[in-house]
Image 1 (spheres, rainbow, N blue to C red):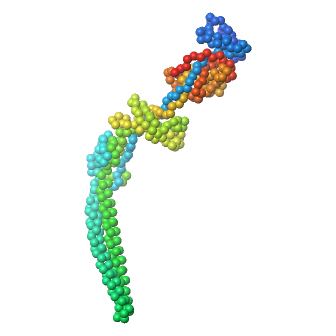
Image 2 (cartoon, rainbow, N blue to C red):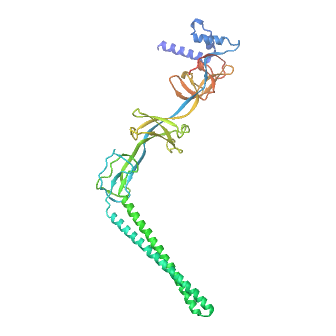
Image 3 (cartoon, rainbow, N blue to C red):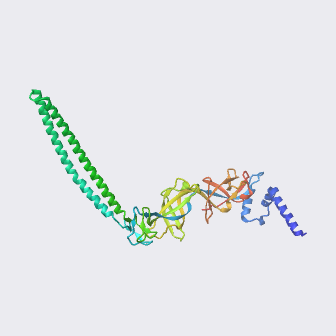
Length: 413
């Protein structure tokens, strides 16, 4: 058995005993160490500690008087680029493709023909519908003339009826003549109704013929499949001779002169994102772009519990492609925070991150903090008062309620 490891273990146990159980004596011994063995900073702390009231045991620490500052905040999301619009243009009718195909990557303008179909007998159907329309339109004058003739007969029958009644009252005509005139009046009135029905029927025939013409015209218009907006062809158009059915794709078009940056914000950050907020992004190729938030989902994804966020960015030269990876930064309202040295952070007995502060009466007090940002100058933390004295040296040797003798140094920032 080697003696050196045993001696080392005994020394370590003795050191742990003094640190844990004889801590106060060890601190008193450190504070009363010879002056030539102290560093300038320790000597200053010791001098401050020795100046306390007799009978009080204060621990010398170095503290910083920190004042909160307003800093810009940002929500960082990982996402991708998406085309502003993408649509697959499909056929609405049946027919053979009679146009040469356009190749993918080609630029098209709104209204450009993508696919043309064989018209077949559709032109003949249109001519027939137009002929029926002309025939229906020709019936209307005839029906209207019938109405005029029927109205004239009514007026004649009315005159005869009035004359018969007048003669009958004077005793110059019989009741039979009056009844006959009454019957003629009713027949003339019925003739007007029949003539009016004929006019209505002729007008209905015109409307039916017009509908047939419109249907035939629309069917011919469907033979040419056009681009709904300006963009790029993502696929070839249908090949010459291909049979198209309703719903058969002709081509896929994407619009890239505006691009969307799509990210998904977690529940903790979604409230910081507002529509119209300024946003920037770094793409996978290193390109940096700027835009504004144009959409924030109000419902979370059922699986990830995240909220979709869209940022619209101008892309006039089409340099940004659909599907690129992007790191998105969205500006949010500024927050007040303290810039402190990272070494000032400590943990309490429950593992909560925070700082030791000097409270009223020079009493040490732990305060939890939230870490906002890590920079080269230090870390930004929040959840502290507007002004606070933060212990930067010696915070590991005090606990809540311990009397301290602080020596203040210059704050960061």
